[in-house]
Image 1 (tube, rainbow, N blue to C red):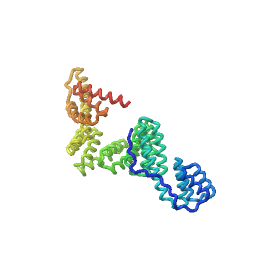
Image 2: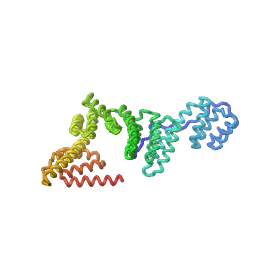
Image 3: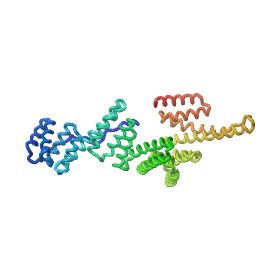
Image 4: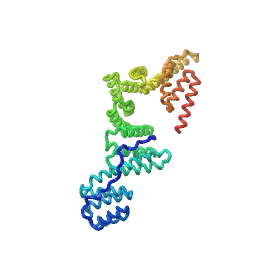
Length: 392
């Protein structure tokens, strides 16, 4: 999942240190201020630590120590000092809050830049994570920082940490759609892996986790076709087909001119292999919006699968008749070819838009073969092979 992330829109202002409003200071504090003016940060820190050792309740000293540690790039130490200052009073709260926000934006943007370099330099992902850690330290409730940190872990193929960061993002913002969908996809993948290991109970639990997240995404944006189709599949895999049926059928009944609802109902019916009914729903969706690519593609898929099912039925029937007639030739039912022919224009149109979809080119190749369109079949399978090799 390679993504190029935009920089955060909040502009990172310079960290501001006010030298006004301090009480008359000790010799150590006065020395620290002088060192700060001279940009001798190590010596300034040394003086402030001496002052704090004598008077740990000196709010000004803690605040200045935070500023000095910022210059030393000791962000954790800086944050610590700021926290101690705020525990003693609110005199510098405005400056501290502003400085934390500025550093949050600075480190967030730094992390984004590093993440975007990760494709060419994988070590940049670790550096991005370090930057995001500082951003989170500055703004612990920043759900977005947890999300982008999750993307960096995912790029490193550390899926466990990816989930942990996404879960943290969701705790901070329960209706965070992008994080919820991403986490749902990971749970869905975990569930599929558990099914292969015969862990049905574990798989069901993960499918249900995915369902809860996809339900949230659908409720936030019911007009998004991806949200509704993901939810349909999750319902079915979680053994809740009744909910998938209710979701789609009732939606169409309430708003028959909604193309997304028609499409979603078609997807549900396609999964149930109710080919006649699903093609009608996809056609309705296309009538509402002739440019509806997803509906057009799935209409092609529906006709293709319908043809495959009819061919299997025809072959089985022909084989039975041959056995009954002791090997004599029987007339083959070629009805399935009508469905293959019907799928061609929709799949070809989809291929114009989904040029990198290897499965689509494979499907087209199969259709062409069944229709004895050898040249087109050869070209489609060649495209499928090229895309498959590119992925590897």
